[in-house]
Structure formats: structure tokens, C-alpha cells
Image (cartoon, rainbow, N blue to C red; front, side, top):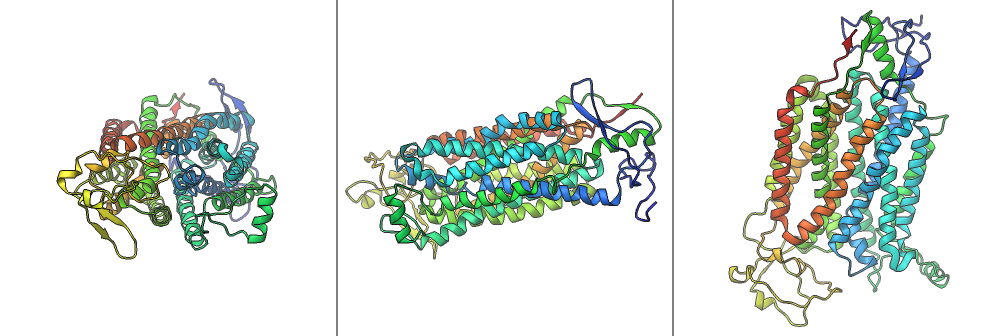
Length: 566
């Protein structure tokens, strides 16, 4: 036996031990259980070995490909988040914030529909390669459509929704990613692997907004007199115009091409010569039974605990996507920023937040080795999120600057003054108290280019802004809590299910997250537009508080499945 191969450890010495095997490991066979799910098992007479050193290296190589895929899918979602609203306004000056909610929701809607189907596909096919290749191809097509929306004229807004829907279907492969991580890791490795997957997603959320911010800065210096951005040479632009090609190259379309390029590289990584699958969890479960010299059966999972985890997962993603969706339009409304300012500053802020998230994702695996996972989930995950929603609540007496789209100067009528922060051109206007709660009847011009809160958002007249330091503190606290809560809710879900094929179940988990990302932007776009920041963050505080109560009541049930001896 090679020197690097160690003998298997007995189950009663260390139930979580990783068996280090000989090269005589038997081939895994598949069978169908009573629930109709395909399970991968070892023959009962198999030796107590798990994998060779070479197989372990290859298995971890497959994990890196999975992490890269999670990273690319996250970029596909986050790279356009800060630019969707100004891109929509560029395509149609009369577009509403309600439509923004639908444009953002199209991505998670596609993910929600496709996730269970992809999970079922992976379970039935016995391999995830086909599902990965198909979803990445849809990812490429969706981003190409996003980059060429200017070709579709009046239908551009509808095509945007369709393109984001396709990208959403592609991102449903996160269900396969979670399923593969669950099936290709031992119980001892799983929390770390889930944390690394989440860290890869977090890194994608760093790079995506950073790319959009960098493009905003690069293209802001190339604006034409028609307020259209283009780096295409003038001669080529004229040829394209003569040929009837309306393809634009600007800070918004460039993000689609960047995502397309990354998708093409990701597609190549799933070629058979590069990516191979290693379902080690089923082998570990069989070897555990063999080491214990007794037969064990898998009980039914604790459905109440699963439902509680699904609820928490829904709310955690709900809050995260809401904040990301709202940041750009909220900064434009409350601080009277230009589109470029909002995209640049929010992009930089999201990138910094993403960097903190990656640190927290990594720190999660360290904390769970020293403390009870459930306590880490509650006190480092859910409690900070609850506090963050409370800090977001508007305070003070500084009110947003209102857009002035009339032919006369109403500055004196408003009795306002403007404070300009150094180097940021952030204008804050505080109306006097006698006028702050009065309705101002001003004719709205849909082509208005004035900065500030739109006249139709009447809550701006009596709701203070969320002060910049307040916003920074609240978002920082949320960034600390979100990675921990997200990672551990996924880990709890996998462990409660036990060592069984989890494709369909992970599809349900992903669909739950997708549902939150569908309803979140739509809910907030209407809530924010009609009632403002007080109601929006007040409701979020109540919802996350209820989630904290639910998880605390299920504390004793958030444990791995116990295999019953027969």
C-alpha cells in the first residue's frame, strides 16, 4: 500500500473522521430508495476505505471549478444591479420605479422556476455536467441580449426582462452546486465547503459592482453632446448607423459583454477532460455503517426544522436583495446624486461590503469550530441583521431635495438651503417646517433632468433622509450578519437532510431564495415609491425580528440527521 495511504479509523473513535483509503476502493453503484430518489451506495462487503490521495486531490479540483461557477453566476447578477435603473431610463425616459422592480425580479423568477427542475435532472441523470453546460449557455445568451438592447427599439424593456429571466434560469445551477457540494464532501468538511461556496458568491458580488463602477468612471469622460456614451470610433459608428445597426457600447452594455466572456470561460471548465464528479458522501455513509458493523437506515428528516430554515433563508435573501436593489435609486432620490455618482459610489460601497463578506464567510468556518453553530447563526448572523434594519430607520430633520421641473424658479417658495459636501456634489435640501408637510402641486415633466426626489413621491416632503453616516453604519452591520446567516442556514438545511441525494431538496432551497428575490424588489419598488423609507425599513425590522423568534424556538431541532441502527 502506498505510503500516503492511511488505514481507516473506526467509527466509534471519530464518527466524523475522513477515511483515507487504498487504491482498491470499489466502484460506486446506484440504487433507488423507497422515496423514488437515486442513492449512491457501496457494496456491503467493501473495505473500510474512502479515497486515495490522488482521488482526494481530484475531488478538490472539482470543488474549485464549482467555486468558480458560483463566482461567475454571482457576477452575472451583481454586475448589472447598480446600472439597471439608469439603463432603463436611457432606454425609456418615462420608465417607472415599479418597472425597475419587475426588471430586477425577472432574474430570481427564472431561478425559482428552474431550480427544482435542475435538481431533479441532476438526481435522475446521475451526473450534473449536462445541467451545468446548459445553464451556462443560457447565461451567455441572456447577457448578449442585455448588451444589445438598443437593437430592439420600443421592445427593449421587454427584452431586458427576458434577458434577465434567462440569466436567472442559468443561475438556478446554484441548486446543483449546493447538491454537488453536499454529495462530494464528508460531514466534517461540509460547513467549510458551504462557506467557501458562499465566499465565492460573495467575491462575485464584490467584483460585479466594482466592474460597473469602473466602467462608469471610464465612460463618464466620453459622453457626447447627446448624452450618449460611446467608445466606438466615429467612422465605425457612422458605418453602423448607415447599416441600421444600433448596437451601443457604453457603461451599461459593456457589463453584458464582460459577463458573456466569463460565461464562455466557465463553459470550457465543464468539459469531460477537466471536470469529474466524486459523490463521496454516500460512500462515507456506507463506510460508516460498515465500520459500526451494523445496518442503519435513514429516518425521515425533521420537516419542521427544514421549514424554519427555509423561512430564515427566505428572509435573509429578501433583505439582502432589497438593500442592493434600493441603494442606487435611494441615493439618487435622497442625496440628489447623478446616475454616474450613484453607480460609482454604490459600486465602490458594494465592493467594500463584498470584501467584508468574504472575510465573514471565511470566519464562519472558524467560529463554528469553536462555538455552537446555532449560537453563531443567531448572535453573529440574525441579530446584526435585525439591528441593521433598525439603524436604517430615518431620523433627524434633513429632508430630500425635491425635483424642480417647472418653468419658474420655486427655490424661494420652498425656503430651502443647499449643503454641498466636498468633492461629492451631494446636495441636501432642508425645507422649512411649515412647508415640509404641504403638498406641492407642480406639473411633472417626464423628461425632467433635475436632481432630487421626484414630485410624485410625496413622502419625501415629510420623511427625513437616511443620513450618510447612518447608512454606512447600518450597511456595515448588515454585511457582518448576512454572510454568517446565509452560510449557516444552507449548512443546517444540508445536515438536517442527512446523507441522501439532495438535488431536489437543494432545488427547493434555491427556489425559496429565488422567491424572496422575486417578491423583494417588486414589494420594495411599490412600498418605497408609495410610502417611503420609514415603512420600508420598519416592515423589514418586524420581519427579521419574527425570523429571529422562529429560529430561537427551533434551537434544539437544528441538528444533523441521526442515523437509526436496525
